[in-house]
Amino acid sequence: MAFEREVLSSGALLRRALGQTVRVGRVNPATGEESFEQAEVLAVAPELVLRIGDRIETAVPGRIVFDSVPDDLRPAPGIVADMAVAVAGERDVSLSYLSDGIGWTASYVGRLAAGAERMELTGWALVDNQTSTAFPAAQLSLIAGEVNRAAVRPRPPQPPQPFGARLAQAEAVADGVSLAATGPYHRYALARTFDIRARQQTQVELFRATVPVERTLRTEGGPLFNVRSATATQPVTARLTFANEERNGLGLPLPAGLFSTFAEVDGSEVFQGGASVMAAPVGGEMEVDLGRSFDVTFERTVLDFNRSGARNQVVDTTQKLVLKNGGSRPATVEIVEAFRGEWRITRESAPHEQLSAFQVMWRLTVPARGEASVEYRAQVGPR
Image (cartoon, rainbow, N blue to C red; front, side):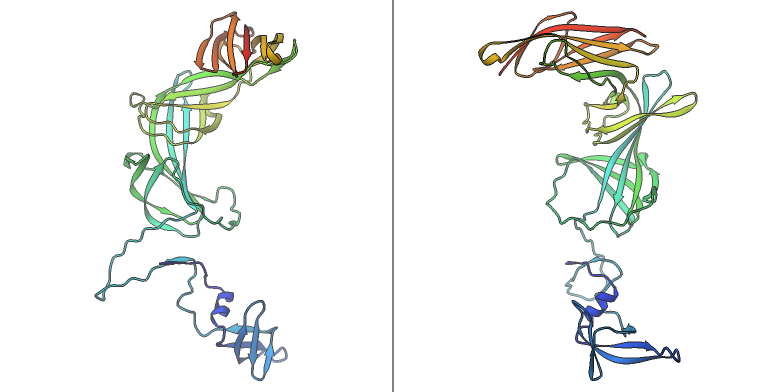
């Protein structure tokens, strides 16, 4: 079995004709009549050399005519397999091989109902065929997971496509999708077939569900080890979280992909933000960071800062964390603070929740057109 890359072209025809005879057609500029001469192809590269009669020519002022096309030249690259059978006749042959240039990605669209903490979630598979080969009536199985592949030679660049030209079709087959585990991965098997067109994308619906969501505002950072009165800001991010559980209408492996969120505003859908999301196994959670909050801002101020201990490696610092809300509604914000080395909080104006060995969180409610703050003192040293 071999993959033949050379396709039918004038250059390929000349290479096949090396040492053979072709015809050269010339047009008489005075009469307009075309005449033909026999020519032997002596060389093709680095330039064409022909023997015509008793002379050698390198620049041919005419066209070259071939009598036939070699059997091994095809209009497109392809796999050629030689089969050995005991008895002559027609056979059905199944051929399995790995192909580069075709794959799929997951994408999700969430629609938030007005005033509700529920979301209509649709999962899509975007099958991207970057090859020059079409696959008519293809049976699709989509593997969810990071499958290792041996390194391959980079593909040549493809000609640019007009915007939107590569999206061939969008199909809804959620009712015909079956799931099965295959080793450490999961396989989405689609019941119907699809026409996968060359250099185009096919969008396939995998599932639909209505899930409860939690909307939160979060800001993440760490203490400043700097001079007194130093200030710094950091973004406050709007986040959606939902559980991948059967009671929520899900309970199926959700691959990593792109997530776009819309909300109903005055009868119209308004884009709320989108992000790349990590895979969410059954029983896990999917978190979607929508973007930076416009109304709620965060500012940190270093109130006190001292170094002590051997080589001044122990830091005692007091930090004030201030949230301001310019909106017309109260907002609940999670402040996540990360520490390095050996640390302990010696004083705080509000109790914290410990998330891990190096992270704590304060949850503050910020009134409309107002502010809220927390102040803490911590001692941080080397591990």
